[in-house]
Figure 1 (cartoon, rainbow, N blue to C red):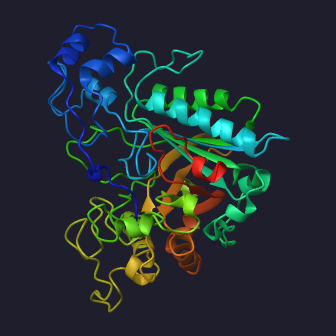
Figure 2 (cartoon, helix red, strand yellow; figure 1 turned 90 degrees about the vertical axis):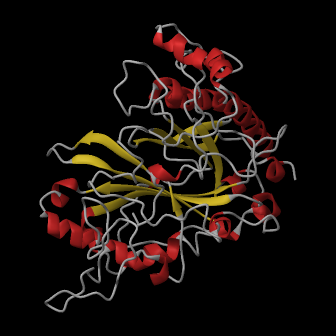
Figure 3 (cartoon, one colour; figure 1 turned 45 degrees about the vertical axis):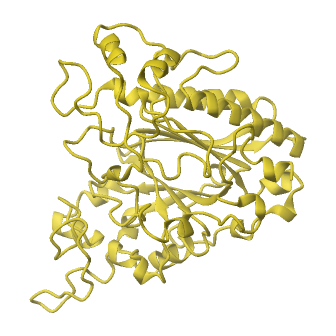
Length: 432
């Protein structure tokens, strides 16, 4: 965890309004197919922001986001970058890693990426799959579905493409907070699925797993969630399961160095990674029983921010600059030296920054009643050796939050740039 994450308020493109005919049909209780909903609600919208609060049923509570608006929201598959990186946080998510099957190599991997890309394009448009659709999402629109595909370190061995493996994909170093389960870490291929409807997200997960056929098998899979769009009276930065506002200092598209920090340049090395990014995935368990025993002031000192509104200790608002030199009457720093927010600041880490786009998770309870819950940490950067690694090393040396979290799984994946029309993700690598 760091002090950077994707706020709900920073959706790059606002949600399109549903048309009057779509609203009328839904209000009347008529069944609306995925294909018909797209035709009536408009197929040119991209991702859900906070708009559309007044567009739905006449009986809807004031300020609620109508389901027609949520369902009609669409992200585009083709583009300079893959979807699911700069899009707004979605309410539901699935992360899954695959290993190529014994005997499968470059040819089988290329065929699989071609199938996955075709499926992703259809599902993100709100269309059924080409063959044997399960009808799980039959009545829903695309619901801001995004599908993102990446390659792990081992993929290049399995496909005899070692010379094309980026140096930035070298294995992450060991960290003192690691308690990693190797069976739930890494993998040849990685898939991220996000949507604002649980059935739409599951439909995509099940379809991609079926598409894998005999070419690849699931290595591990994790499920996550976030606050649903429209659940708050106004757009707000998300909260994590510790109750803390999480994501105030995330890089923003308006920042002049946003692309430089996130994406491999068009003339970067290797060439097939142009406009791509690297993602670090960590399953971070929160020791909530211990955390919840702390008083409110103790929790705020661990984080370095007020729990109520996310403002830095001693500051006025969430976005106020953090004064690291400010002291209290007793002469101690208002923001403790080991506070999580102090340690993770880019200006305290040589400018290291990453775009976090996480999901919370809850996988039940242990025999003693302790929740198996926490954060599916997902962070994006142009180079993990300049983004994630230096920040995590510094956290390892004295972050107050470390006593209340445990890193239980980890992965690093190369996510190539977006596929052009008629291409599939990774084509420049597999056919180059």
